[in-house]
Every structure is written in C-alpha cells, then in structure tokens.
Amino acid sequence: MTTTRVKRFGVCVLEFVLALVYLMTGPVVSACTFSWLLQRFAFNPDGTSSFTWTTWLALAPLLYAGWLIWFLAQCALEVQVHSFYMRYHKPARASDADGFRNWLMLNASMCLYLRARFVMSLPLVDAFLSIHGLRNLVLLSYAGSTNLGHGSLVLGYLFDPDITDIGDHAIIGTASSVIAHSITVNPDGSRLMVSSRIKIGARTVIGGAAQIHPGVQLGKDAMVEPASYVAAFTQIGDGEVWGGNPARFIRMRNAASHRESDAKANLETALKLDDATEKALREIVAMALSRTVDSITADLSARDTAAWDSLAQLAMSVELQKRFGVLLTNQESFRLRSMASLRAAIHRADSLTSSSAPRSAGGL
Image (cartoon, rainbow, N blue to C red; front, side, top):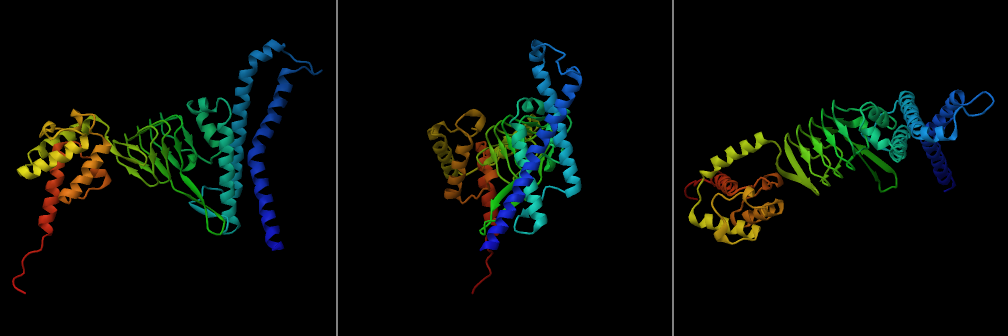
C-alpha cells in the first residue's frame, strides 16, 4: 500500500513539473527577455525613462502586441525543441498505464492542450488567427506543425493543428471546435487518449459554433451548418450540406448539383404507381406536412413548401417502411425531396422484392 502511494505521489510530482514547464517557461522567458529589451532601448543608463508617461500610455497597445508576438515565438521555439529531443508526436493511442513512453506522450499532449487554453485566453489572439503569418505563430505555440491551405480562414478553435488538414480557401467559423482527439478513463482508473486525423476539403465552410470530431472527412465545397455536431469518423462528400445534432445530410450545395438533382427528378417523374399506392403515398406526405390529402399534388417538392424539412423527411421514411417495407439509410431519407423521389424509392423497393422472390422449384 505504501509503495502504491509513493508511486502515485511520484507520478503526481512528474505531472506537476511537466505542466509547470509547458505553462510557465514561455511566459517567464518572454517577460524577462522583453523587459531586458525595453530597459536597453527605452531607458537611460541612469535608469530614467526616455519617454513621458503619456507616451508610455499611447505605446501600451503596441507594447502588448509586441510582447504577445515575442511570447508566441518563444512558445513555438520551445515546442519545436521539446518535439526534437523528446521525439514527440501526437499519439494515435496512448495510455498512462502502458509504460513510461506512452505516459510521457499522453502528458505532453495534455500539457500542450493546457498551453492552448492559456494562449487562446489572451487578448488579441483571436485577431491573430485571422492574420496570415501570425496565425501560424499562434498554432505553433501549442502544436508541432500546421496544415493550413492557401487562403483558408480560421476563426474557431483548432485543438490539434498538427493532425488537422485544412484545404485551400476553407473557412472555420467563429466559436467552432475542431477536435481530433478524445480522452477517456479505463476501468482501472488510467487515462486513455485516442486521436485520428481530420481532413477539411478546399472551399469547405464550417459554420459558427459547430463541432467537428476525430476522423471526420469533409470533401471539397462541403458545408456544415452553424451549431451542428459532426460525430467522429463521419464522411461528408463533395458539395454536401450537413446539419443538426448529430449532423445529417440536408442537400447539395452548388447550383450544378441542383441541376443534376432536377434532371434526376425529371427522370423519376416518369415512374407511375397504381391508384391505391399513389393515394397511400399522398396520405403519407399529407400527414408529414400537416396538410390535407387534396393539397398534395403529383409534382409537389420541398421547394414548394417550407414544411417539407428534414423532420418531415424522417417521418415520410418511417411511414414508407411501415406501409411499403421500404428500408432507407439516413442519407437516403434526407434525399426524399419530392413526390418523384418518393415514387422512385417505392419502385426500387418493389424491384428488389421481385428480384429476391424465390422461383418455383416444382412439387415437393
């Protein structure tokens, strides 16, 4: 029991020292060196100031901005030095119960996350993130590398810049969080960290206050609506718009995709249902949209009524399964945007049923 307590005490001391190094080295070194530079250039040999108090007051914002840049540069250099000597890299999987090396990688990552919180709490840092050149300095102060595309705009919080790829001209909205790791606790009390690279395609837009989790892949020209939650390892295709909690496919983003959808819908319009099935289909749509059956026309679509939203599409999908045995995936459910697409879903289900029906094998 005593040995266990001593071991725990030793681990706590090591974690405290490591956290202290990451949190305090940058501020202390930058404050001392910046003060020395000020004393060298702004004060006379006898210790008197070269400027009046009004001049110091006017220069205060510039002095703070200068110190902040100096501080970020010190932190970035420190991270690079530690990464070189410790051979640090963001672990795909690390537990503090799997040996000293894994313990070191886990705690180094935790300390860098603490450094990130400290850095992001400083005034002007948010503004620096939107300035090319300075944003790299901010991110490198708590990460070993960055992967920012040309013309990209980062207004949110990147927890793991070293394993987050951001394409050209992509936009990360204000107050959004891009998190490429998760930390949990094992039954024995040990901590486990798992990380997976996030890829954000060119011209992709992530709305404000959205959350992107480990392993998410966003294609080119994709869009995540504000305040959406994109679950881990979700794959969003090129030009797709997703939203909600958890995020689901809503529509295609660009006009070209809309024209392709319209062309597909025109082809689907040619599909015919028998009178009884058509009537049942209109009843499903009327119930989902809270409208009368008589108001449901043969060519009605989501563009004709605001009530035809994602919740209505889910209700239609459930009723299609109950009445016609049509099984749809979540993504297919969110593509039920017109009466024509509903008819096509029923036709596909009928075709699959017919092809899978057993053939007669004669008498037993």
